[in-house]
Length: 438
Image (cartoon, rainbow, N blue to C red; front, top):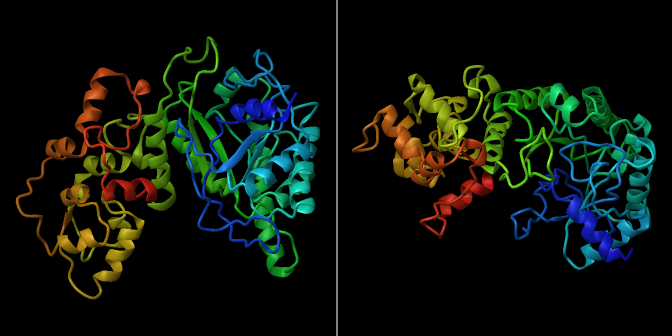
């Protein structure tokens, strides 16, 4: 099979992995090819909206496992291909020199055994690092069931390493991925987090000690393939952040890849809006000091599609508002819709010099169309503002979203970053999408 054919097959097989994110490392080229930067990888996007800043491929889509949700499962009748380590290394360097990519994301189906597959990944990365002296960003998938020593070697060569948990519960795993178990996924995840902690002490003690996965580890969960609620998913994410010190949990809206009785039928649209709400909630867990139990509960297990999680929490807890921006604690400012991490920091700094008014807040990056319902400036609300719970709901919920919600179920709803009636996004819209501030 020609190399171009292999690339078409194995790049398509890898597209459901969410992996393009900031590199998380600060390393110059050091005389080699490429570099990794703490400010992140330059993004470009394919026609379907997927990020292609990395060469994202599988080493092979042959697989011993028969996970029902996976297009590469053993029982699925698809074209199969396999790269050699040298072919992947040559492709990566060739694409980098043409300025097509900034780094590599490499995963694989499991062939022969987890150990053999992991050895093949290690050989590929060794060629890139040692033969080509490639110093760019590499994200590698650890193989569940592989020997810990092999995972150690993989982590020394890669910038980021990840083990996908895929499904939020043991019951879902047992039904859809009979060859996997919760322990087979969590054991390597625990080993990686422990090795990262050890490596920090080694680097302090020995300057020449090699870095182990300097960009940390991540994982991915599939959304919409099983009946698991947003509450279950968010609680699991919170627990993994605490126990394994993950850098990111990626959420991937399930795209039907065949007719399976236990999965949504072919033709079902992926729940991209639900995925988006989970990313927003994940951001609140990591940077805003929220807990999963504050955002959802046993009685309300899924997010409101019409409101982002922060707005929904604020409307449900109006007893905490309004807050005085000139005296409120930083932690409370973070809970105000429309005030992000950076704008809260700017407020705390600026108010030491003078009292802030609404014009000042706008200059500091506060999204006033959200924040005005929850704040006071010098003890006053904005002129002409009338605050009621129903009124806030109407103003914060997009009319187009309300119409879509009336026409479709939550699981079928699709995401729209901008108002379709206003085809030119505002500067405020662009900043919100890029920074994640909500």
